[in-house]
Length: 126
Image (cartoon, rainbow, N blue to C red):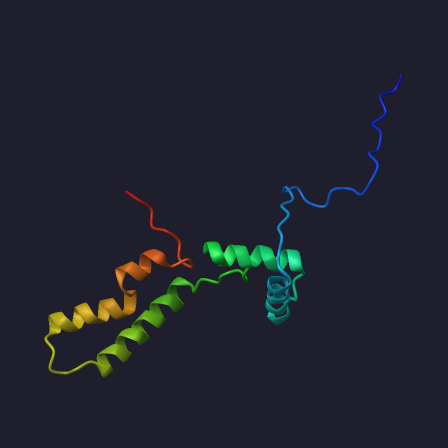
């Protein structure tokens, strides 16, 4: 005899993630719908709620357009242009050591901001 796999009744599953139901007041639902209407791709309510949760959790880049990193040559060129502009705008009376420190802080950014950036990969710990 053949083993026949019987088809289950009902609509087939559309996703692999478990369903989570939430209650939203009418005001909150209207706010979510208004936010979704402002997006370029006009997501549905479920996708809008998903995106807003990701934004709240700080993972906004997961649905954003793919980040394009500048190539080595163009990144170096941008850094060089930034340093020239900083040198041109800097106070001519400051010492050369202080200029180097200021330039580095402006080009690299403060360490507390560098650590919190979501669009940059985390450095490997040694």
